[in-house]
Length: 169
Image (spheres, helix red, strand yellow):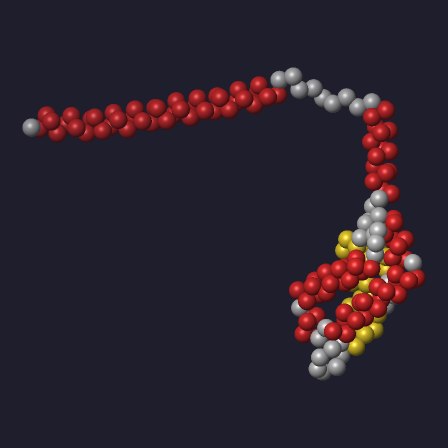
């Protein structure tokens, strides 16, 4: 009986060592296959060749993109009474980031400028101090202003609204 007990632990150790060797071999095989895949995918790779003509075309495309870059239109400052109690006033300066030159020119037309100011004033008159006190309220106001001005414009699009001056008293 003593001989049977000695053989059982020896088989467990042999099985543990066999599993360790099998995992080591499997690990080496996977690492070798990954290394080969990386090597095979880089075969035939060459440094890109840049010619003067290609550089000029790239420069021309970048300058074309600069012509269509967003433009910022700064509106005159607003001083408006807020709704709600207690009565408060707000003074803010609104900057509209326009997509493209056409939209910028459209928002600068006197008729559209007057309509945009009127809609923003009406929007601010409906707001209470509690609506504008938090960051979320200011972000919501930005979205509402962009939506109102986009409703006026036919060709142009307001991409974003910035406040360069925002004081509530």
